[in-house]
Image (cartoon, rainbow, N blue to C red):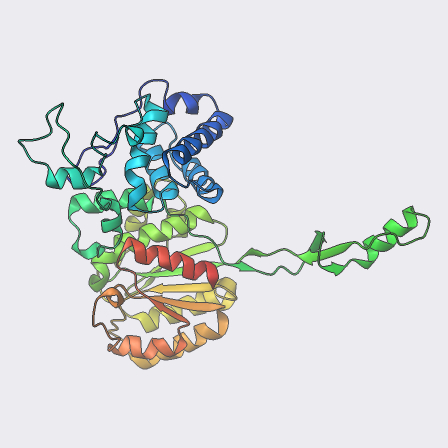
Amino acid sequence: MPDQGIGSSAPVSEPAEGGVASYARGGGRDVVDAVLGFARTLRHAGVAASPDRVEAMLSAVAALDVLDPGHVYWAGRLTLCAGPDDLDRYDAAFAAWFGGEVPRAVRSAGQPRLRTSTAAALDADPGQGEEGEAPELAGRASGDEVLRHRDVADLTAAEREHLRRLFALLAPAAPMRPARRRRPSPVGSVHPARTVRRALRDGGEVSRLLHRRSRPRPRRVVLLVDVSGSMAPYADALLRFAHAAVRAHPAVTEVFTVGTRLTRVTREMRLRDPDRALAASGAAIPDWSGGTRLGEVLKAFLDRWGQRGTARGAVVVICSDGWERGGADLLGEQMARLRRLAHAVVWVNPHKGRAGYEPLTSGMQAALPSVDVFVSGHSLAAFEELAGVIARA
């Protein structure tokens, strides 16, 4: 099992032979059956594992290594639990279903409740914890929940490693657009040709109206990630979010890095493993931790890519703090040009999440008039909000 928090141990023992691995070796159907059975166990334990949450867990497990009990544990914990009160029941149900242990969440009232591993590690008393003792343990908020709201620039190396596991479970939804081609549908506008053909088969009498409507298709998403020196504390997290977006929708997602020059890293981001994708991207970026010329780089993007179709009708996400070494007037002109091409422009500034922040830099003041949505990008919770903004754009 992977660590559940910084300096803590796993809340449940690793499933023995015959647990998660045995389901995985049985094939995809067995994995689905195992997850559905686990969801039933959770509901008996008092966790409202709704069908949409179970579907989210199945999607997460499909994207991870189902042979790794840690991946299965975190996939379920991040999708099936609705709040801190569910965590102790989840840990007990996981141990019971996959590891064959006695469900601790249904023990008698005289025995202690299971608390989360992070809280247990922080509050443990060396004189306690002996077998047979039953201290009153209060449920604590999960360390994951605390970490979700922490600024990624202030994390320790161990916390960053823990956050990377949570980033691996992100699956941003693509924004949708109406398609021009219409397909048969039970509802929608009447399809004259199909209706007439059906009537001819029925002896010339129109007995039923057949309908058609357009089905939505994914809209292109373009991410421009600032990798200059001022964005160095956030560049890793931003690129991991970009990798999650590419992994979820590789055909409609483009990723570029901006600094003193423009670099397309979409091909590198299509590598399945996040660490390999970031390593390949880092090797392809010649201006990592350099300066920032947003106006010139944005002009280069529009001249070479945007005007030719990449930005047309797309949701363009610019991740930058707005520091501009070049002229702010050029940035304002190119942002207005981008706004005319794109369906929506989203600006992500990590500093927006700090108390008292105001967009006073010349770059931000020049860009904001052409921005549809201005969001923060300093924590995992902010990236989850960003994923929702993109999906709704």
